Length: 327
Image (cartoon, rainbow, N blue to C red; front, side, top):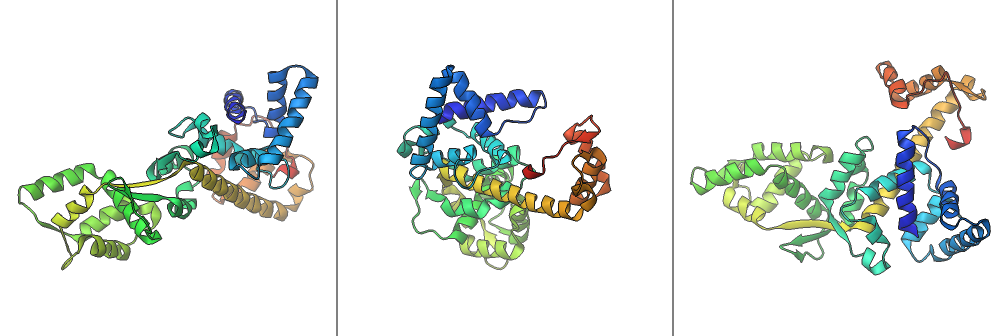
């Protein structure tokens, strides 16, 4: 049932987006889904009860069911609607059909994807969330490193980072590598000054705060650098070896969910703090749009952002209703 529910929710959310309508909470959508599926009220009620009992019973045994239980708001740790929205975007953009994730548990737990594919999803679908930084260490800890399709055992966290940095460097600098290789084959150069290479490595991995000291450490360990120069024979030997960095799809999803919860939790704390300091607005039962702008300006600070608020929210009304319990 779960992939069918998620698929229908994605479809309905897309319809709501086109009409600028707020998404339904999962519990509201679940009732709607069951009514449309079973039609008769008695059958619908019976199946809803059985489904909820099943979610509660099996949530301790299966992380997929436990995740859905939290989306429904059954028991402790209800997951907020914004996180559900992010979760559904994640499902839609996986390199495999999310229906396959809801086959038997053993099969669903066997699907893997490259770490860089995870980052591409983050960059393309969540550019303002900085997910590649929020989840970086957690994802890297559960990755498996393969060298020429053979898994490397007992590989340390720092070594994983080195392989990750160099793999990104190689995959994003194809033309540079080809030009360097041609010069090397023709005997024009046999070594290269480390600084130019370190600068490129840092630029490509700039989001991960890779500094010059760390680059030199990597070069010394991997390429046996001598007198500030890298031996190109050792350099190309390393990159002729095929390294692959993979992790399980289900681990990627769960770590991403945790990060979404942290991000929205931090945002809620910031908003609550701003709200507590605005006593004049707090004591109102309704909020004027100018009051809403005032709160956002305090959150973002820069008055030049003011024009973006109306553009983003696209409100044409003077009054904005706010349900304080949902903040």
